[in-house]
Image (cartoon, rainbow, N blue to C red):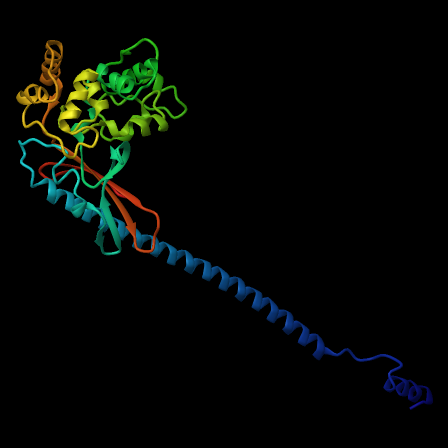
Length: 355
């Protein structure tokens, strides 16, 4: 070996020249990068699976709550049916009966998973003043104006006289309801009502019903009806029942709507016990109305004639259908849910809506 070669090897061995690559260090870096990638992937997978598990657990919880709500709504309905089936089919009904207001039966009933009450808001006397109070019981549908069978004049009078609406608005809404349910295509009033040609021109077109309403929510489809108006009138109108108005249970607004004047309405409410209607009387038949009203004040000839006229065409002393409003609160929850149903005196279910 030449001296030149020996000198080059010596320099290389001392680190002054070419070095052989360290493949072990590069391999370790690749393994580290791979591990980091695997860790990131597994972390993403864990987060994804955790989210899916939470979603499924949340769904299961909602389904369990829905089952509990269904069970409690059904329990409230069965309790209402048991009470109403005790009433005679051809008897008279008034507001001091068990079905109308009995907290012992309908208030804060414990059930598996929570508590329910069958209750409704009603006008009454609280501390000597008129107030909205809670009654625990059923709402008879004959205390309301039936939109499927009442004349346009009665519906208009409810809106105008009973609820104090503007004359034009009351007229237009009443005409709209009549044209929604009748089978012809003629407008009840020239302006303000609607038939098929109006509804077909909407952004989301549909036809007028041309038949009886099947749910009260159908009102929201009628021309001129808004959610605010609906909320204002919904407790005074119905699509169930006989179409007659129970003189023992109807509020002032409804009694005025059927055609009675304020003087007669005042005498009826006074006989029934005023706004509270808890301690007053009731009518067991229409034939005794005039005699019993004379106990609270003499009826003049015009009032007697008006009473007989309205009684013959619009009044009754009994109710055939009843609304069940169930207020349900699940254990651990602070917000109530409402189930709504309508039943007849035989216990048949006419309408059912779960929370």
